[in-house]
Image (cartoon, rainbow, N blue to C red):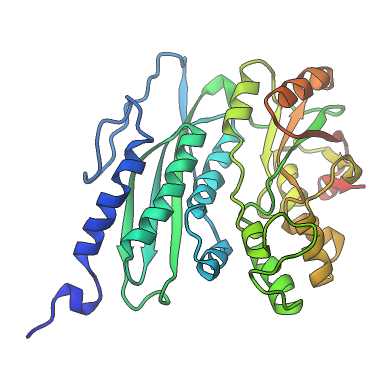
Length: 344
C-alpha cells in the first residue's frame, strides 16, 4: 500500500477530534461581538465603538518561553495557556488598552487531542479573565520537527483605547510615585536561568518538596502569570495613571525605565515588599548576584503604575478593596538615562 498523510506523520482525524474537544471552551469566551464560530478561515469581530471618540487598536504578541519545559516534565498542561494570554494582554494593558480578542498558535510533532484540549482550556480561561474573545487559532502537526511530547505556543492579542487615553509615560514627572502590584511568582520569564540554578546546578528534582513552598517545586514554578486587566481597567475609570510597565523579561531594571521620559529615573526601595520564597531559592541555588535577579525576574512585582503623589492614598485604598496586594515601591527623580533605575 502507498503512503498517505497519516502514515507520513500527520493525523487529520486527530486534528478534527481536537477541534471538537476545544469547541465548548472556545465558545465560552464569545460575546455578541464575535460573528464567527470555529472552522472559518478568519475570525470576525465587530467591536462596539460607541463609547470611543477616536478608537485606536493596540496589539501585542508573545510566547511562553522555556516554562514549557516544566509543563512537559510534569505533564501539566491546563495552566500554560493562561500564561500565553497573560503575556500579551498585560503588554497591551500597559498602554491603557482593553483586550478585545486573542488568537493562538500551537505547534507539535504529533497531535494529541486530549492534551491540546487541556492547553486550550487554559487559553480560554485567560481570555475570560481578561475579557478577550478567543476568535481563532492554528494547530500545526509537524512530524519530526519537535521531540515526542513537546510543543510550542505563540499568540497575539488586539485591544482598543481612545487616542487621548493612550498611556505613553510622557506625562511622568519628578516627584511621581511608583506602585507595584504583586506577582504570583515567576510568571513567564527567566526560566532558563531558574532551571539552570535549581535543576542543573543545585540538583533539585522537579517534584521536590521544599520548605517554604506551598507546592512541590515544579508546581510552584508552573503557577500561571497573573492577569492585571480587570484591576487596571477599573483604576483607569477613576484615576489618572501616568505610566504602566509590565514586569517581564528584564525585570524591574529593564522594564520600568522603558516608560520614563529623558532626564528621569526611578528609585526603587526593595524593602517595601517581600519577594516570594521561590526567588530566594533560585538565588541561593545558583549563587546569583542580586542585580542579576532583579534584571531577570519580576522579584514579586508583576506590574508597576506611575501615579501623581496626591493620588497615592486613594489608589492604594482602591487596590486593597479590589483584593490586590499593592506596595508603594518607589519615586521618580531627576537623573541621567544611563542610571534610569536604582534599587536601594
